[in-house]
Image (cartoon, rainbow over all chains, first blue to last red):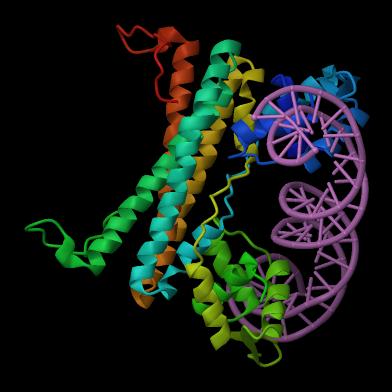
Amino acid sequence: MKARSSSFFVLGMLRLGTTSGYAIKKATDISMRYFWPTSLAQVYPELGRLEREGMVVRRDDSQGNRSRAAYEVSEEGRAALLEWLRGSEEKPLRVRDEGMLRLYFADALPVAERIRLVQRLRERNGATGAELREEVLPLAEAFAEESGIRFPAITARFGADLYAFAEEWFAKLERELAEESDPEDSGPGDQPSHSGASNP
Amino acid sequence: MKARSSSFFVLGMLRLGTTSGYAIKKATDISMRYFWPTSLAQVYPELGRLEREGMVVRRDDSQGNRSRAAYEVSEEGRAALLEWLRGSEEKPLRVRDEGMLRLYFADALPVAERIRLVQRLRERNGATGAELREEVLPLAEAFAEESGIRFPAITARFGADLYAFAEEWFAKLERELAEESDPEDSGPGDQPSHSGASNP
DNA sequence: GTTGGCATGTAACTGGTTACATGATTAG
DNA sequence: CTAATCATGTAACCAGTTACATGCCAAC
């Protein structure tokens, strides 16, 4: 079996209780899209591959005239998943993000627009954080309660905390840039020294 | 001109003072690889496209027998970059990471191995954080000092802080899991209730 | 009766990586 | 003298996305 992370993604979702391709996509959109977005056009061929490799077994689960497949992870599939989970060398978390690229080049913008850019970046992180906190975390925690499966909730929590951190970080940068460009606006009696190597 | 982020990446790097394709790749490896990894096989064709579109001007910069091209951003190129930097709707920062996938499915592992997985994830974030803190940040700050261009350093700082946060978060999770599975190991007089919805 | 969700799949395209191919110059 | 770095590019491949194509069923 070829070691594609997408295969393990599907395998893992099946082991978590989802049975059909459609269900995998739906469940992912709710809970895992922040760290592993996917599409149906990826899930279906992957299920086919896994079946051919004997990692999953397909069974018909049609309801009346509406066809549906139900997949089950085979013994080999379980073993492969476990082996992958144990896999030792962890590649670094790599982000590839257009927003960060904009930040990197922000010197090209006039000061006021730099601040607006930073503000937008703060807002988008805030929005993602809120989604995770308010929508996916509660669901993941409910799932943990009823099933005893805790790591989906832990993952959601990490996402919520991470994006909250990013939001705060950008909020702080925003304040600092605003203070620099507009010193009179700082608190009463404040000497707005933009000097010392303050945080960002 | 087609709105590919890779075009703006190259455009931006040129505006930052790098002149050749090779130099762009090298500079990226040092400073921006954490948020925008790239390869020569992407940079060269991109430079070609940008030239055909009139965004950059290629000039020969060969040193003796060693050929080298030097690109300069045209007026149109500068305008396009600026427009892109201003571009309003900021797409959410999307991560796609195998490590997080492992975390999500970690319930399938026996407890001791879950902890080891979390430990590995902590370590990889720590390693990336250290690289950013010790290698890229100093360089970016030196560059800021000599050029007045600050946002590369700000970006590096964000990366350093972000990965440090992630490291701490996983360290905390690691401690909590260890305490749960091995209650005698907790501090003297500690009632190791694994109950209350503590952080992760 | 028509919109939206359930359900499955394929085709075309895009963006990116690794490997290949070549050659000059410099540092050890 | 040979390994590393500078320098440019192409070809083959891979993973992922969007768009297309089809049809059932429930809700409004």
